[in-house]
Structures are given as structure tokens and as C-alpha cells.
Length: 259
Image (tube, rainbow, N blue to C red; front, top):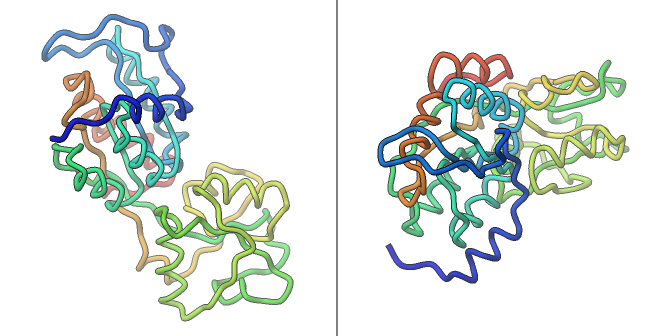
């Protein structure tokens, strides 16, 4: 694997917004070879924020002496940070393309494993005041819609669903990730947003309008330990926990489906 510039690594680190779930905040001693312990850094798609935060806490409880440091953003942004040298143990993306991008760069030497599926819906305010029933309704005069930028997974899913429906939509805004699109709707800046079912389920003030074309644009989420993980044993244990019955209970409870 080609060496990565130190300046790029420092720049990537400076750009991160990372939260530690453990009380030590990532300052505990590193685990020895093959041992589960110390800090594990997890980069995950923005749509995984709520379930992964809970899973990280459960993992720490089940493995005393571990600290999970989480960074959530659009999968494409995370892939770019990894390729620029950000130190990461585990990457969970919202579709296979960002994982392929780091594989192509020679960063990810471990085969990614699909673990959950997510489906696009039309998010509207609770009660659906405008009576939106499908994708075609989003083109009605006066209706403004937020979608994700095409380079991120939720944006690619939206493009595929709209093409399958034969709907030409001019969005009011393109957002950096699914949570940003959802925020536009919550703030009343748009009338609807194309986001994941899981995001609407986690937002009581919103309702989900499902549409048949979404079934042809279901996102498959892969997860992988990176080949240059600083704590590979704990990283592997975290991935195993995500895929375990306990981890899947959290994910399916949040609205994801098993891959």
C-alpha cells in the first residue's frame, strides 16, 4: 500500500467531528495483540447515527476497558477522509460505492460485509397536510423538496427511484447527507424530503409516504475493518457485535432490515 502524506492525515483529523461514547474519551491504554480493549474508531454513515450510538454504548458495557469513538457524516465524505489518511478502525457505509472508493485507493484490505438494508421514503410533516401520495406529487406547483446530493448514497437512491418512476423533479435544495435534508423539512424550509425510512421513524414530527419505485433503489449497507486499523482485534469485535443478535435488534428496531 502506498504511503499517505502526513499533512493529509493531519488535515483530515482537523476536519473531523468525533464523539467518544466511553467515559475515558478515547484515552485508555491500547489493547495488546489479539486483545479486545482500548479505543476503536468507527466512521459510519449519517443515517446510522442513532442506532450506532446505542450499539457503541452497549459494546462498551459488554467489553469493559473499551472506548468507541464515532464519526458520522455522508459516506462519500467519510471515504474521502479515510483516503486522506484519517486513522480509522471500522467503516460502515450507506451503500457499496464509498467502500469501493477506499478499496480502489488501497486503504481497505478487508472484504466488506453487507449488514442492513434501508429504503427511501418521502418525508412530510405529520398529518401530510399537502396530501402527497407519491413521487409525481412532488412536481406539483408550489411544492418544494429537499434531496441529497447525487454523490452521496441517499442521492443516488433518489435519482434511481425518480428515473424508475419517470418523474422529472427539480429539487429546491441538494443536501450533503440525509440528516441535512431532513433538517430542511423539520425547519419548515421545504414541504417534503427524500430520505430513508429509518430517519422518519426516528422523527415523531414527520410521517413517511412510501412509493413502489423505492423497492428498486434499496440501499445495502456494508461494514468493514480497515487493513491499517490501529486496534484490529477490537475493531473486529465491534463489527461482530453490530452483526450479532443484540446489534441487529437495535438496527431493526430503528427501521433497518437485515441484509
